[in-house]
Image (tube, rainbow, N blue to C red):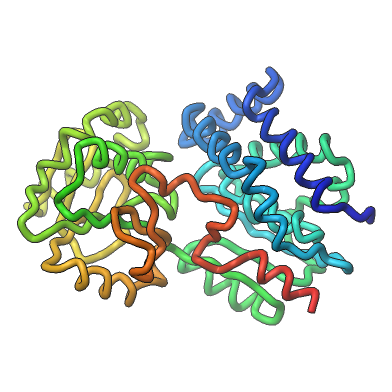
Length: 341
């Protein structure tokens, strides 16, 4: 296989970034086709995902990220089992494999089997040397390592099947927000992106909010009103109606603003169209509790400083990871580079 330098890859990724910003009609047709195949992948959701890729591939971050990457002298075959909960969620894993000079054996999710190949096809058009390093397969075989993303249930299968090779196996995670009570309406409105982007289906979406003990939950509703159009999506609406019915039948105390249900609960993972909340007495107590549950948490939105030991992001930024924001806080590049040793 031809050797590719970091500069070759950066040039190709910059071209991809430019293309995504102004895609041709053929690519836009693929976006429409993806929306027909998966009703969660609305044009707005796909545009949001493409925008996230553009943000990730900014020139400054590309140079900084690649400066710490060793390209493999002997390329390894890395099996990738990708999720399909949000559009092109596996792009970063593929990028990590290509950036380290390895070959990506990609098992696509049936929920997202059109968009990612379309993006990677454009990338290989800008750098033909990558074509031999991207292989699609229905069943992984002849691999040297595996990165697999799935649920808590599928992770047990992954561990059994791939346990004898180097691996990263990802399980269910969710994100949370910590409010202090001093947030502005604009900050709560920004939190709405963390809750509602991609209909709340990503591991970086906020599924639970921690509130000071004297917080009035209804204060959340007015700043979130701009997201009310989400209820017009029939699948989201079905989930909202179902969960509302369950709470009403069981006489479960909850808050309802017509498109989101808020329920007090100690769990972190909430059903679709529901956000759990929990009161806390002191910030130290909730920080300590969350540090004990790190394996359930992808990121935390709030005003907290990064020295609290949690992966903190600003309100509205949970679905805007940078190149070095690795899923489950496992550095994929470090993992892949260690295969060379």
